[in-house]
Length: 209
Image 1 (cartoon, one colour):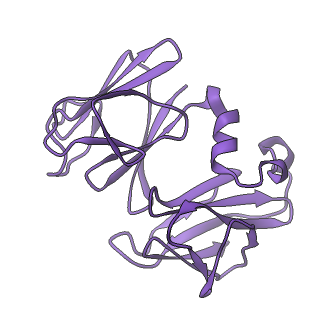
Image 2 (cartoon, helix red, strand yellow):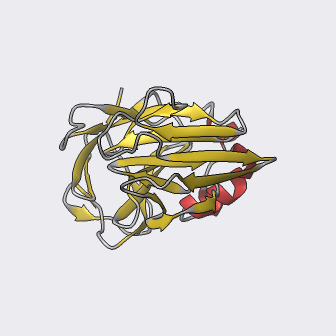
């Protein structure tokens, strides 16, 4: 079932399953997805489901609707697409298309551990703690095999869970993220408790509980 994951400054604030033919998004309280922010129009956009396909349509909003950094009027959403409305990032996740999602977000797809193989991994709970910006102090739990962080078009990194621990690698972007001050490239780098990451101007810390 497709869903929209709404975040601001890299911190997820809500997840909404798309179960209806029409799902509306806007500032007014009667929308299915309510984003109470002045940059969002009262009736901003609508998601329309047609079978397995989901189309996003901008409802002549004041500030526009962007998909992967480009303004759209109406566009079919692909798994992993990043929708931007004001300062909010909304990730479109379609479980039925998970294979393409793995290929697009993971650099070394061959070395990714499938969820079924890693459930017995003795890793404990890990999280990314935001250290700067409006979301400072919040923790984002690393509950998936692959967690992407950052800002599309600026810098996006993927944190991947493996049997021996967590690794991070650059997915896309002009600014290289750093770990403890050293730049990260597309080669995976192991994460250790207390490591400091800086990505797209935001400082984060990797913590294992």
